[in-house]
Amino acid sequence: MSLKSLTKPWQPMSYGFLDASAKRELRRKMLKSVAVPGCQMPYASREVPMARGWGTGGLQVSLTLLNPRLRVKVIDQGADDSVNAASIRRFLALVSGAPVTLDTLGADLIQSRHRIPEEIMREDQILVLQVPNPEPLRSVQPNMSIARQMHADADYGRMWLQLYEQIVRSGRVMQGAGYPSLVNGRHVMTPSPIPRWDVPKLNMAKHLSILSAGREKRIFAVPPFTRVEPLVFDDVPYRVEDHGGLTCSRSTAKGFFMNEIPQVDGSSTYEVSDSSYGVKTIQNREGDDVEFGETWYKDGEMTQ
Amino acid sequence: MTRVMDAPRIVTTKPLVVVRNVDKNYGSVQALRQVSALVYPGEVLGIVGESGSGKSTLLRMMNLEETPDSGTYTLDLPDVSGNLFELDRFARRMLCATRIGIVYQNPHHGLLMRHSSSGNVAERLLVAGERNFATLRAKAKSALAASEFPLERLDAPPIELSGGMQQRVQLAKAIALEPALLLLDEPTTGLDVSVQALVLDTLKRLQQERRITMVIVSHDLGVIRTVADRVMVMRRGEVVEAGLVDQIFQDPQHAYTQQLVHAKL
Ligand SMILES: Nc1ncnc2c1ncn2[C@@H]1O[C@H](COP(=O)(O)OP(=O)(O)O)[C@@H](O)[C@H]1O
Ligand SMILES: [Mg+2]
Image (cartoon, rainbow over all chains, first blue to last red; front, side):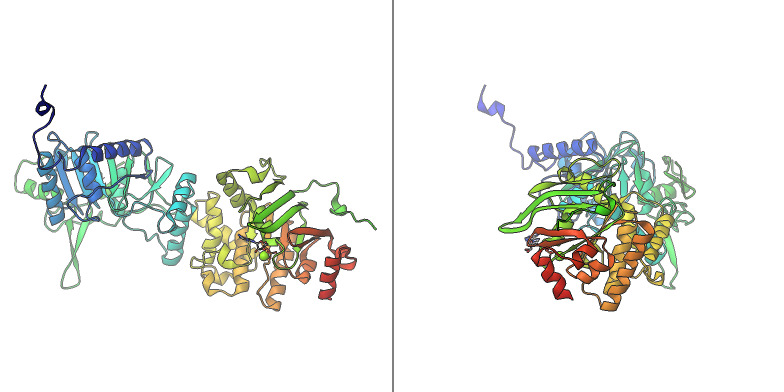
């Protein structure tokens, strides 16, 4: 046995960009976060060829999970075609050899910024959400060591106080994206800045969601079939954005989360935010053979 | 003449609060030295003493914010037992949040100055698990009304209120859950004399209507004389004398108390 036979041929970078020990740490932290749903696990966020705050947390999770047998989709605010989504998708494919797709149904792993696709995700799919601020208590408790104690004690009264103050001041709950939610009846998490529209999709979902903040170095997860309840008062129901009745001006898709496009005359038109779903709707109208998945919302109403 | 130190008036009742032999040092400062105190259900215990005599420290101990170097503290309540100083952080927090109310001398200490006044009261109910908005609001309102807080300012933040009003918000917060024990640390210090009298009236009324057990700390003998049934005189971390208010004021035994009473007259 020669020394040469024990070594691998020289490569310009590690497989999947991250080195093996980084990936091992991420895997362990992911397992921990699945074991304690909604609880933030610290990890040593590595440098990746992208600035912190651009999805480096999600990227590290994707790099750890990807292999050439998994098909990857990348979403940025619902769209597959933004510069950021396109670069991340190309980078992931380059360093892992994974094939890419724009179709939610065909993806094994979906890395997303600020949206959950409109088509229901399956047991065999993983959603990786990029998280800018993992700490839901930050707005009520700037001292992070006290915030950790509050999580340990499930001391969340201040979160409801925040809602109380919003109702008293503005007559309604003002919290928009990143609506704080109780996971598995125990830990309050921020579901990353997804719209209120998307939060109910996490409740008892079939798929695994992993949420990762690269700058803040925290990973947390919503395992399959886990309760995710937005914080509300008993007598003030949770409300999603009023998009149920809107129609997409390009694809005519109706009853989904929309992007508002302001017009010069002061009015607005709307485009379906899930660009892949919009494209499929257009292709379908043009007579192409496209497969649609079941959607979480039907006619603008959550189905479960 | 010998003096019976503890409440001859209600000897048959079990004390609600028993604090025994508490010592507390801050570095070389002996803040409390072998301090013991009893508080009977429904009574108002006054604690007087010059500034720095350890009054606030003792009150913080009773609110389980601090742990002494030695000593014990028990509360005679259903499902509360043992030396409370030995409880862990979580158990302490739950006990304070639900059974003990406190009004601090400095409202900045007890209130969220930029939240609404009603929200400050509601927080206390939220910690105890209330999750109905209408109920929270109704209960906050009624606690504020009981503290004679003007309800048209219900949602004004304390930072926009006068000192007297801030103390009423603190009081409302403290009584919102019908506490077993209400602790008041110089609740009228820093207020105008006329406002002081109003706050004291509110306290007396609350005491008469609800029979809340109270411990009120003040360096002002007049305040203690107005609201307390019994009084404990502290000096340099020690209890020098204790007894019924009338006894102590008419016939002080300890030289220090005599000095206090005569200085006041
Ligand atoms: N957190 C602390 N650290 C150091 N010294 C303290 C602390 N709290 C109180 N002390 C000291 O303990 C003594 C009693 O203080 P305190 O209980 O505030 O008196 P009072 O309320 O009667 O004016 C004072 O000498 C004070 O300086
Ligand atoms: Mg003091």
